[in-house]
Length: 130
Image (cartoon, rainbow, N blue to C red; front, side, top):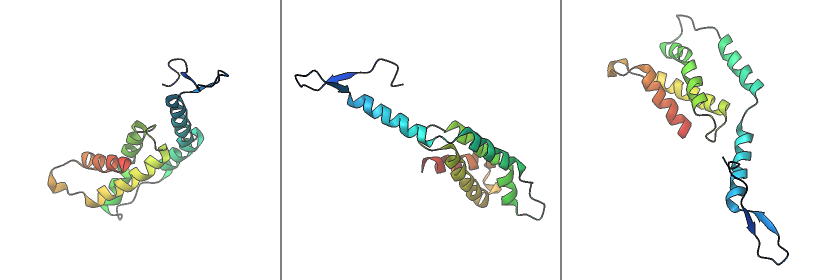
């Protein structure tokens, strides 16, 4: 975005003709560097997603909320992928999304008439922006 046009130089006003980057370009560089620092390595993300897939499903003796959390993990990953690059690292989004999914599973009331996926999506998105 900040390299779309050529850099804007600002004259410092001295007689030696010294130029420097404009404040807008300096801020754009700082934002780009901060975004780059938030991105996890691809290997780390692949390892995490592989670990999620190796967890066995819970047995019938496990509470219903834990079964919902297990079944809706891909929803958290999908929403985290869609919201990556907005100032929070991908793995942090997944972590906060899993916490929100657990809370949503505990507080879900099927008698309210709302589907669990819609209910959980609201909780997960709220966790992303809080």
